[in-house]
Image (cartoon, rainbow, N blue to C red; front, side):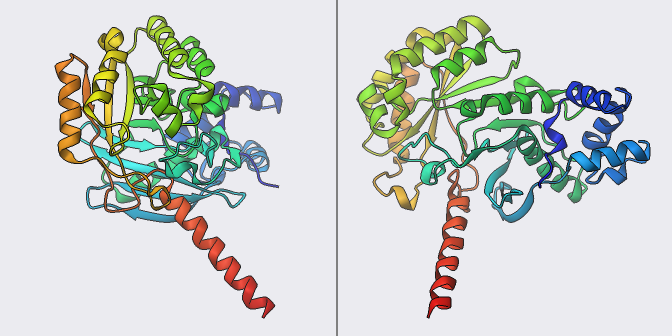
Length: 365
């Protein structure tokens, strides 16, 4: 039976667990420092702990539950990791280099059920949620990779925008954030963490009421219900009107800026009338909202969509600017590798299925 990742426990949860098993709560601090400061990969590398405590932890937890399967490195420094979980499933994690630091994009689910028609992540349905430990370990695997390069680099920012819908795994996602932002551990500040959602309205409100304090991004991708329903199934359950009401609740509750993500699809949502409609939708919230325009990374399985031209993107940007909307164009990363989220995983799974089918046919011949 696979043991759970110890990374899934906050410091308080670890202290409580040790106390329940007859050990001093103070030993949790030693374990925590070993995990996040010394970054050990085996419990035997914590000599400051009593042997009985190490044996207990070894019996109930694992430090390493992810195995690196594939690594793709881009000319711009972006690195996409494909990790295999203990149950054999594959997930993606991405390291991106910015002027402001090193950002890691983490995955929260094995597959995705949201079903956005342009997204590679949804090519394979969700089979399960990731545990908070599996999400934290993605960050730790990237940090250990950086440590191995001996350049003194550290992960400074987190984006929860990988495979899956984070708010569909709200409890584990929340616990993940509490672990990585703890100042005694990785100490990644909440303003350096951004969570993205496709628009689960009740969870946006719950997020606003939480103590997480991180940034929020909404995958909007359309200026009206007709287009959004066509490209995002979730709009059938949560149309733009209740979504914007939830956004207003978040803005009033937190007074924090929100990012509205908008992927530009040629001749679908990138025309001048779409830009004007989007400007009108955002206008009453423009003091606390930024529209982030995203150039589309084509996916073979979604051949009905094409990338908008540079001229179209510029015109869309200019229209929003002229209407006093805060707008930016996402800087692209890893365009010379499998850049689209979920693309590397999908290709690998399809390849493995192909090899398995070929072997089965050969065995039956």
